Length: 198
Ligand code: ADP
Image 1 (cartoon, rainbow, N blue to C red):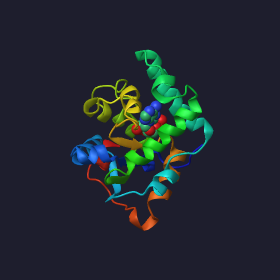
Image 2: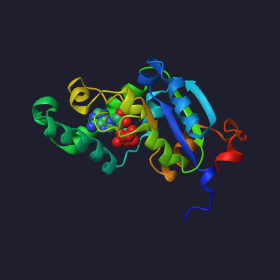
Image 3: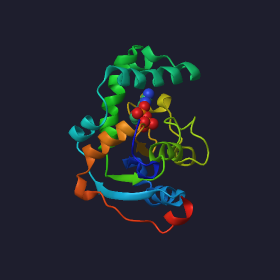
Image 4: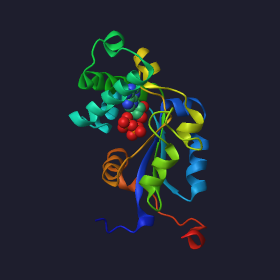
Protein backbone atom coordinates (compact mmCIF):
# COMPACT_ATOMS: atom_id res chain seq x y z
CA UNK A 1 0.00 0.00 0.00
CA UNK A 2 1.31 3.44 -0.93
CA UNK A 3 1.32 6.18 1.69
CA UNK A 4 1.80 8.90 -0.94
CA UNK A 5 -1.17 11.26 -1.32
CA UNK A 6 -2.83 10.49 -4.71
CA UNK A 7 -2.15 14.03 -5.92
CA UNK A 8 1.59 13.55 -5.37
CA UNK A 9 1.86 10.50 -7.60
CA UNK A 10 4.51 10.89 -10.30
CA UNK A 11 5.03 9.21 -13.65
CA UNK A 12 7.60 9.24 -16.44
CA UNK A 13 6.59 10.23 -19.98
CA UNK A 14 8.80 10.29 -23.06
CA UNK A 15 7.91 11.66 -26.49
CA UNK A 16 9.56 9.22 -28.90
CA UNK A 17 11.50 10.36 -32.02
CA UNK A 18 8.40 9.89 -34.23
CA UNK A 19 6.42 12.23 -31.93
CA UNK A 20 9.18 14.84 -31.90
CA UNK A 21 9.69 14.71 -35.69
CA UNK A 22 5.95 15.10 -36.27
CA UNK A 23 5.85 18.25 -34.16
CA UNK A 24 3.62 16.73 -31.50
CA UNK A 25 5.57 17.77 -28.39
CA UNK A 26 3.37 20.81 -27.75
CA UNK A 27 0.15 18.88 -28.41
CA UNK A 28 1.16 16.15 -25.96
CA UNK A 29 2.11 18.59 -23.21
CA UNK A 30 -1.12 20.52 -23.89
CA UNK A 31 -3.20 17.38 -23.32
CA UNK A 32 -1.31 16.54 -20.12
CA UNK A 33 -1.65 20.06 -18.71
CA UNK A 34 -5.26 20.43 -19.87
CA UNK A 35 -6.22 17.39 -17.82
CA UNK A 36 -4.86 19.06 -14.69
CA UNK A 37 -1.61 17.14 -14.47
CA UNK A 38 1.61 19.03 -13.75
CA UNK A 39 4.87 18.79 -15.71
CA UNK A 40 7.60 18.96 -13.04
CA UNK A 41 10.66 18.05 -15.17
CA UNK A 42 11.26 18.39 -18.90
CA UNK A 43 14.18 17.96 -21.34
CA UNK A 44 14.90 17.22 -25.01
CA UNK A 45 17.96 15.06 -25.67
CA UNK A 46 19.46 12.42 -27.96
CA UNK A 47 19.44 9.04 -26.18
CA UNK A 48 22.16 6.44 -26.70
CA UNK A 49 21.41 2.76 -27.36
CA UNK A 50 22.97 1.94 -23.97
CA UNK A 51 20.60 4.36 -22.22
CA UNK A 52 17.54 2.87 -23.96
CA UNK A 53 18.83 -0.65 -23.26
CA UNK A 54 18.86 0.22 -19.56
CA UNK A 55 15.41 1.78 -19.75
CA UNK A 56 13.47 -1.21 -21.12
CA UNK A 57 13.22 -4.40 -19.03
CA UNK A 58 15.40 -7.39 -19.89
CA UNK A 59 13.17 -9.96 -18.13
CA UNK A 60 12.17 -12.90 -20.28
CA UNK A 61 8.47 -12.39 -19.45
CA UNK A 62 8.62 -8.83 -20.82
CA UNK A 63 10.47 -9.95 -23.96
CA UNK A 64 7.96 -12.78 -24.48
CA UNK A 65 5.13 -10.21 -24.20
CA UNK A 66 6.64 -8.20 -27.08
CA UNK A 67 6.79 -11.38 -29.17
CA UNK A 68 3.22 -12.33 -28.25
CA UNK A 69 1.95 -8.95 -29.45
CA UNK A 70 3.48 -9.60 -32.87
CA UNK A 71 2.16 -13.17 -33.05
CA UNK A 72 -1.36 -12.04 -32.08
CA UNK A 73 -1.41 -9.40 -34.80
CA UNK A 74 0.05 -11.81 -37.36
CA UNK A 75 -2.65 -14.35 -36.54
CA UNK A 76 -5.41 -11.76 -36.74
CA UNK A 77 -4.29 -10.39 -40.10
CA UNK A 78 -3.14 -13.70 -41.60
CA UNK A 79 0.64 -13.17 -41.70
CA UNK A 80 3.06 -16.09 -41.36
CA UNK A 81 5.66 -15.38 -38.64
CA UNK A 82 8.12 -17.97 -39.94
CA UNK A 83 8.00 -16.54 -43.45
CA UNK A 84 8.22 -12.91 -42.30
CA UNK A 85 10.66 -13.22 -39.39
CA UNK A 86 12.20 -16.68 -39.72
CA UNK A 87 10.73 -17.87 -36.40
CA UNK A 88 7.43 -18.23 -34.56
CA UNK A 89 9.11 -18.32 -31.15
CA UNK A 90 7.80 -15.51 -28.94
CA UNK A 91 11.15 -15.01 -27.18
CA UNK A 92 13.10 -14.88 -30.44
CA UNK A 93 10.61 -12.38 -31.90
CA UNK A 94 10.59 -10.41 -28.63
CA UNK A 95 14.39 -10.09 -28.78
CA UNK A 96 14.20 -8.81 -32.36
CA UNK A 97 11.51 -6.28 -31.42
CA UNK A 98 13.57 -5.09 -28.43
CA UNK A 99 16.55 -4.51 -30.74
CA UNK A 100 14.40 -2.57 -33.21
CA UNK A 101 13.07 -0.56 -30.29
CA UNK A 102 16.62 0.51 -29.37
CA UNK A 103 17.14 1.65 -32.97
CA UNK A 104 13.80 3.49 -33.12
CA UNK A 105 14.28 5.27 -29.82
CA UNK A 106 17.72 6.55 -30.85
CA UNK A 107 16.70 7.60 -34.39
CA UNK A 108 16.25 11.22 -33.31
CA UNK A 109 15.85 13.41 -30.24
CA UNK A 110 13.30 12.52 -27.57
CA UNK A 111 11.61 14.63 -24.91
CA UNK A 112 11.53 13.23 -21.39
CA UNK A 113 9.35 14.51 -18.59
CA UNK A 114 8.08 13.80 -15.11
CA UNK A 115 4.37 14.40 -14.61
CA UNK A 116 2.67 14.70 -11.25
CA UNK A 117 -1.00 14.57 -10.26
CA UNK A 118 -3.85 12.41 -9.01
CA UNK A 119 -3.21 8.80 -10.12
CA UNK A 120 -0.69 10.22 -12.62
CA UNK A 121 0.37 6.77 -13.85
CA UNK A 122 -3.12 5.60 -14.81
CA UNK A 123 -4.24 9.03 -16.04
CA UNK A 124 -1.28 9.28 -18.42
CA UNK A 125 -1.68 5.69 -19.67
CA UNK A 126 -5.26 6.58 -20.45
CA UNK A 127 -4.22 9.76 -22.28
CA UNK A 128 -1.62 7.75 -24.24
CA UNK A 129 -3.98 4.93 -25.24
CA UNK A 130 -3.29 1.29 -26.08
CA UNK A 131 0.23 0.31 -27.22
CA UNK A 132 -1.13 -0.79 -30.58
CA UNK A 133 -2.62 2.06 -32.63
CA UNK A 134 -5.46 -0.12 -33.99
CA UNK A 135 -6.62 -0.74 -30.41
CA UNK A 136 -6.08 2.81 -29.12
CA UNK A 137 -9.35 4.66 -28.52
CA UNK A 138 -10.06 7.88 -30.42
CA UNK A 139 -9.31 10.84 -28.16
CA UNK A 140 -6.07 9.27 -26.93
CA UNK A 141 -2.68 10.44 -28.19
CA UNK A 142 -2.02 7.14 -29.95
CA UNK A 143 -5.64 6.85 -31.18
CA UNK A 144 -5.62 10.34 -32.65
CA UNK A 145 -2.11 10.47 -34.13
CA UNK A 146 -0.81 6.97 -34.96
CA UNK A 147 -1.66 4.35 -37.56
CA UNK A 148 1.19 1.82 -37.24
CA UNK A 149 0.96 -1.94 -36.49
CA UNK A 150 3.37 -4.77 -35.65
CA UNK A 151 2.35 -6.40 -38.94
CA UNK A 152 3.67 -3.37 -40.85
CA UNK A 153 6.52 -2.54 -38.49
CA UNK A 154 8.00 -6.04 -38.21
CA UNK A 155 7.80 -6.53 -42.00
CA UNK A 156 10.00 -3.42 -42.23
CA UNK A 157 12.22 -4.67 -39.33
CA UNK A 158 11.34 -1.90 -36.87
CA UNK A 159 9.28 -1.30 -33.73
CA UNK A 160 5.77 0.13 -33.71
CA UNK A 161 5.70 3.93 -33.96
CA UNK A 162 3.25 5.05 -31.33
CA UNK A 163 4.55 8.52 -30.36
CA UNK A 164 4.91 8.22 -26.59
CA UNK A 165 6.21 6.05 -23.79
CA UNK A 166 4.54 6.20 -20.37
CA UNK A 167 5.25 4.18 -17.22
CA UNK A 168 2.78 1.37 -16.60
CA UNK A 169 2.86 1.10 -12.78
CA UNK A 170 3.93 3.38 -9.89
CA UNK A 171 6.91 1.03 -9.28
CA UNK A 172 7.99 1.29 -12.93
CA UNK A 173 7.49 5.08 -12.73
CA UNK A 174 9.75 5.38 -9.66
CA UNK A 175 12.43 3.34 -11.41
CA UNK A 176 12.20 5.30 -14.69
CA UNK A 177 12.15 8.73 -13.00
CA UNK A 178 15.28 7.77 -11.03
CA UNK A 179 16.90 6.41 -14.18
CA UNK A 180 16.31 9.51 -16.33
CA UNK A 181 16.40 12.43 -13.87
CA UNK A 182 18.46 13.56 -10.91
CA UNK A 183 16.47 14.93 -7.92
CA UNK A 184 17.57 18.54 -8.57
CA UNK A 185 16.07 18.41 -12.09
CA UNK A 186 12.60 17.76 -10.65
CA UNK A 187 10.68 20.85 -9.57
CA UNK A 188 7.98 21.66 -7.09
CA UNK A 189 5.34 24.35 -7.69
CA UNK A 190 1.62 24.92 -7.22
CA UNK A 191 -0.70 25.13 -10.19
CA UNK A 192 -3.37 27.83 -9.96
CA UNK A 193 -6.28 25.39 -10.23
CA UNK A 194 -5.15 23.10 -7.44
CA UNK A 195 -7.41 24.98 -5.00
CA UNK A 196 -10.43 24.51 -7.25
CA UNK A 197 -10.10 21.09 -8.91
CA UNK A 198 -9.03 18.91 -5.96
P1 ADP B 1 3.96 0.43 -24.00
O1 ADP B 1 4.90 1.37 -24.71
O2 ADP B 1 2.51 0.76 -24.31
O3 ADP B 1 4.21 0.33 -22.51
P2 ADP B 1 5.32 -2.15 -24.34
O4 ADP B 1 6.06 -1.83 -23.08
O5 ADP B 1 4.66 -3.47 -24.44
O6 ADP B 1 4.21 -1.02 -24.63
O7 ADP B 1 6.29 -2.03 -25.58
C1 ADP B 1 7.25 -1.03 -25.67
C2 ADP B 1 7.24 -0.44 -27.07
O8 ADP B 1 7.74 -1.42 -27.97
C3 ADP B 1 5.87 -0.07 -27.62
O9 ADP B 1 5.45 1.22 -27.24
C4 ADP B 1 6.08 -0.19 -29.11
O10 ADP B 1 6.70 0.96 -29.64
C5 ADP B 1 7.06 -1.33 -29.22
N1 ADP B 1 6.44 -2.65 -29.41
C6 ADP B 1 5.81 -3.39 -28.49
N2 ADP B 1 5.42 -4.57 -28.99
C7 ADP B 1 5.82 -4.57 -30.28
C8 ADP B 1 5.75 -5.51 -31.35
N3 ADP B 1 5.17 -6.68 -31.19
N4 ADP B 1 6.30 -5.18 -32.52
C9 ADP B 1 6.90 -4.00 -32.69
N5 ADP B 1 7.02 -3.07 -31.74
C10 ADP B 1 6.49 -3.35 -30.55
